[in-house]
Length: 154
Image: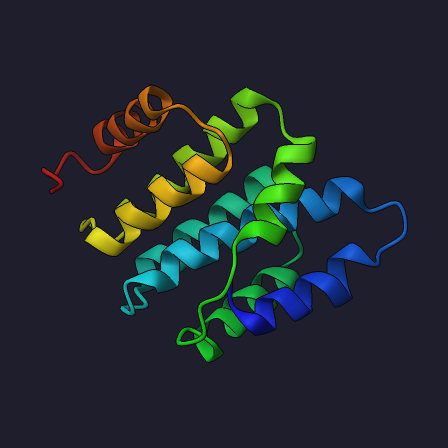
């Protein structure tokens, strides 16, 4: 992940008292932000999808969402390990929650009506690190692609 996102995760998330569920949510949110920035084209549609998903599914504050996105914009060039986030998710998410997260990653990738090869490769990498089967990875991709605006994705 991005160095400043890791610092944010450590300072704001890992050290919160009784915030285990909150930590898990922000780990998942960080992976969504990584999908948004991986293609180096920061689309407002992707940002909007992330904001909606985070508010609806994870109940993150506007400030936390803005901070995560801001850090991603600042540090897009410094790629490091995803392990810190995927480990937390593996420790606490059920199999179906991991598949749901992969679906959300696809929603972010398809938000701009274009699937970049880097986005797809990153989602595959994350799915592997989360031990999501290839069949669930493909099923999630097709489900989200089908649900997207009806435009043909490639």
